[in-house]
Length: 50
Image (cartoon, rainbow, N blue to C red; front, side, top):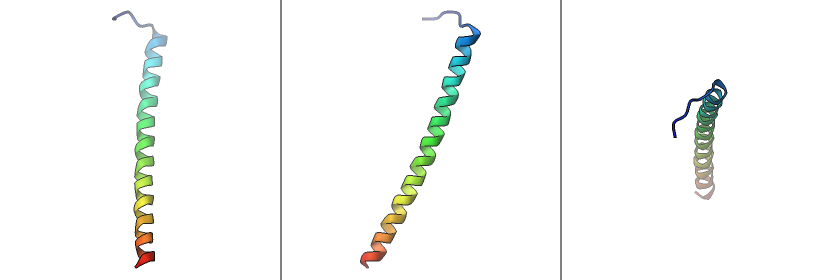
């Protein structure tokens, strides 16, 4: 399905790619923060029950 892309379509595609990259970065940061918080909570719980 190859057809000539106008400047508008090209811009939309770039915006989509940029949005995807930003979303992936945000998701990665969120996952890191979540695992960090979970490990911290885990340590705190272990400390509580010792």
